[in-house]
Image 1: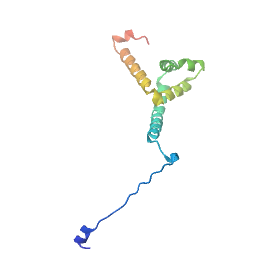
Image 2 (image 1 turned 90 degrees about the vertical axis):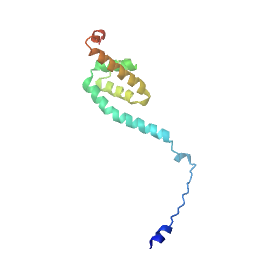
Image 3 (image 1 turned 180 degrees about the vertical axis):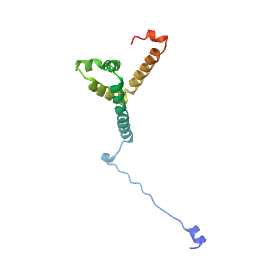
Length: 127
C-alpha cells in the first residue's frame, strides 16, 4: 500500500440501541448504589468499632452510649452481656439512617473528653 491509499481508507460502523421493556430486567441504579453503600459502610466500620468497643469501653460506658441513643433500657431488661451490647450498638451505628445521631454522639463525647483533659474545665465534668 502506498501512503495515498492509507489516507483514503475509511472505517464505518453502525450502532443499534435495543430497548428492553421487560420490568424484570430493569435495574434501579439508585437503589443498587444505596444497597452497595450500606453494605460497604457496614462492613468497613463494623469490625474496627467492635474491637474498639471491646478493648476500650466498660459495660457501663457502653450502656451510656446506648442510653444516648435511647435503647439502654431494652438491653438492661434483656440482660445483654458485653458482646451482645457491642453487637447491638455496632449494628445501630452501621445503619445509614442513624448517621446523624451517631455523628452527634461522637462529637459530644469528643467535647466531654476535651473538657476532662483541661485543667480548669475538668472540675465541671461529672463523669
